[in-house]
Image 1: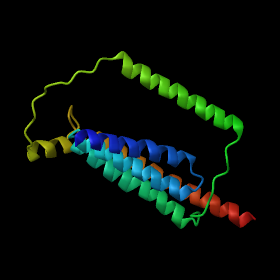
Image 2: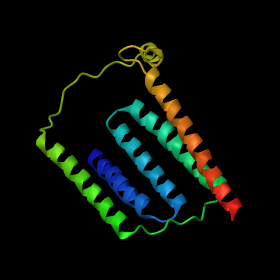
Image 3: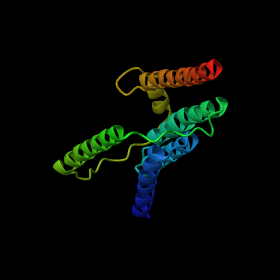
Image 4: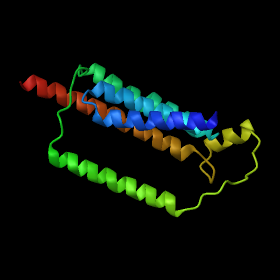
Length: 172
């Protein structure tokens, strides 16, 4: 069952990633991105990385994608269609993707991966709470502060995009 779920999540990630960058409708691209992020969280759950899966769901799927969708809906661009890219941009994008795929495959194939037998650690809520509030070696305060800055930047960017489009429409 784990192998089937891995292939299912991987297929969802691949298909929705391609649909996200090839669709011409902005709202559909945001929904496809949401599907990719949810499937990635599913892979994290399969690997027993519950914290990473929770961060993936709350920060990316729950925060940024919802913010993008709200900015699309609030700026009345729900029916906006992107233009087809010109040939040079398409060739450059395919070239960059090919180089990226080559780099990833070279890196993966040059290393031998072996399963580790690390013992399972006990779950202690006091230790988890102290780590969440700690700035030390295993602390999570810095990542949460960075996440808050990232969400603030995403909100400011959404406001700027909405304001630019509003100003552009008012000049016409």
